[in-house]
Amino acid sequence: MSITDNLQNIKSTLPEHVTLVAVSKTKPVSDIMEAYQAGQKVFGENKIQDMAEKHHVMPKDIEWHMIGHVQRNKVKYMASFVSLIHGVDSIKLLEEINKQAMKHNRVINCLIQIKIASEDSKFGIIPEEAKDILESQAFSELKNIKVVGLMGMATFTDDQEQIEKEFKLLKSTFENLKDIKTENCELKTISMGMSGDYKLAIDCESTMVRVGSSIFGARNYN
Image (cartoon, rainbow, N blue to C red; front, top):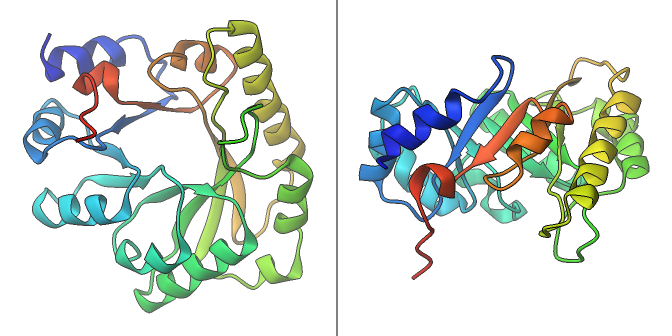
């Protein structure tokens, strides 16, 4: 199956209100261009350097999403073009994104990453901490970012019940926080679900799924 076929198969299973982020990490520009020519315009990378290099040589109507863990000292390399930053897990990171966005006279959209998995390796903050950030004075002063939703990654397991429970935790957190509406916060997006569990995520009301290997094939980490 070609990348184009894979993409069309996946898109045919997605409801209209669900955004597909094609996770292109580790993949060459030629593969991403095939997906682009098949109509895909939203791509996700987990390394800022790789994303910046690809952005430089690829069509400028692509929406680049940063889906990996973000180091504050690297925000400057994507601030001029990134469309959405998924893994925001501290007020300090929001402040840095705001600072770098200001230099480019932009407002950068962000998702707060909620820790829903039981694994220690997953990043994110607990729901109470997210609420504290969004209601804080420090957050209200950030004019060059906008928090547009939440993101979460489920435990890497075959236990569908556990994954469903974690997805439902993200959905209930979203419901609890969505009434916080300010100039720089309006929650609309729930980003959860990857190649192995995106259908379950959509059943749990995800509005954005991150699919890579089901489109591009196995990763090459060499």
